[in-house]
Length: 392
Image (cartoon, rainbow, N blue to C red):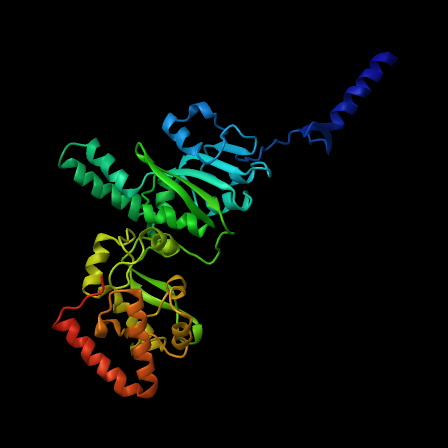
């Protein structure tokens, strides 16, 4: 009886004292838990974990492309297939490269996900991913359905998968119906999001129906950017005194274009007239808007606010302004930018000629402000209306 009593007491003691054993780095750690009350239900908290992939599951072409930059079998490389930022946060701290086999189109809250990937990597760390661009998606739909029906499906697909996720009134409905998956992304938006998240493109390659990319961490993510998809948006430009002003314009480029301006310049350089050469960021409708200055009509708001004047040098971005000479940058700081630049008077073709044109105008304006603006306004109007001068 004594023995049975001792056994019963031991059993009760084991029920009251519960120990969880966790393994980590080969060491055992004990955690105390209070006994659960009888009848209480145990609720498991869902914690998403990365689905680690095997190297052998990759397509040979994809594997060969990635192995040009990282050793897939390395201990500090994590190969995952996930769309949740929390999964990336649970990767080891020693991780130096992340390969995500999930398309960027299917990732929930893309900005938060890419920011989490950035924080989980050291400076110079590598992130590899893929995206089905808008062009590739269009080709897939065109070949999937019979002629006639395929163009109708492209229209439906564009409205449902491109427009709905962007509009505030339909965004939540889209997320509820699709789980925020299978979004349509342009190449510009995909690259722009990566650059805004602190990455820089190392290489990209079309494989199958996907665009694969390799990017490296060069800085921390930007926290001052917001996705703006409406027809009118604000651009950060430098005004009088070097002050950053927000210039209103009609959208002619895909979203997140601003963040890859340096990338486009380094790969395509400048065309005649000082614009970026072969700028793939400009949409088809945007080219039409630019031809007839429709995109610049919202800048009248800046004129009314006092940020701009009617005639003056262009308000420039930080990157474009860095291409100018130190002398011109200092002179520019003393004056407000304008709606009608001296470009339409002198019609320069190279960056050097553009700088000479602007400096000549500013020097003349400092001597005779009103007369200079009147003279430049009349000459610019003549070139625009009679000679059909255009800024491409």
